[in-house]
Length: 312
Image (cartoon, rainbow, N blue to C red; front, side, top):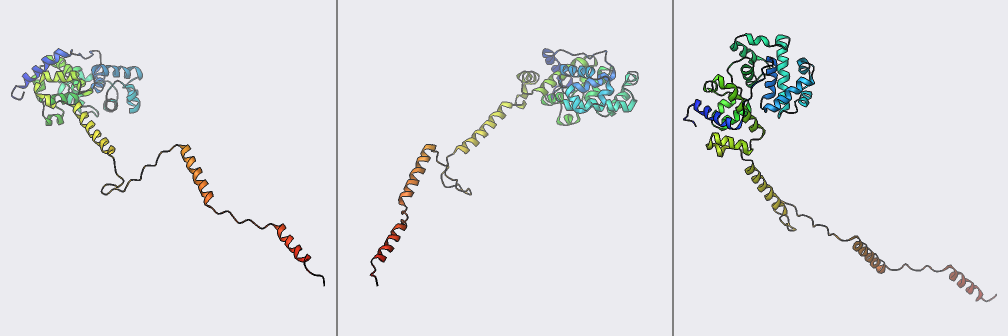
């Protein structure tokens, strides 16, 4: 795919995406700030999960200021539908804090009236905003031509050979806005994001694998292979178990102390019989103690001696 122009590459990618996904249009009723918060939820997540998380924020809290002062752990509980709740909660909290410090309110509708270039630069300078969030706001709220790509989408494009490792590190896709026209930007961007979200959720899924091979059949060797890793791990564990089960002699191996013999397992009755026999044998071998001379015998012998004496 390296010799083909980038316009042809992305046109081919768009044709395959249309077979599997439907375009998703942004909600025109949302304010600029709401588009920004929704983008914080949408990054590296599916549209359904992001919509559920955004609705949970709106219905759980009184206003955006309450969301701003809420802890990350509490926001994670509300954003339960997202795959990476701590990251999304951190983005939402930081963006709301940055907006409040910049304009002392949560109203960004003035951005619609300003020039797009300076406004995009100002949004990029806010704490917590990523390239994906800024591009989504520019495309969905400000009517500019910017296709948002998150980390999952960049991984897909890198796997397909559409970006280099340097582009991945820079979180950018060179020539994307030139290859895809503005009229097709929302359609193409939403379908590409769905593929990236599915790849992030499960890069080993057969459906994702099939779509990627339709786009570029030459990447089969570069696709993640979970089964091969499992079989290798099973072989190692089997080898370890065989090593443990190897019979050992009384003499220890080199550098190992000899192992004590395993105690024999006998029934309690056998042990009692053996103890009884040993005690009986011990009593039989001992000499009986000498019998003490009875006192009556001593007294009798003395009286006999006195009776035999002759009178003087």
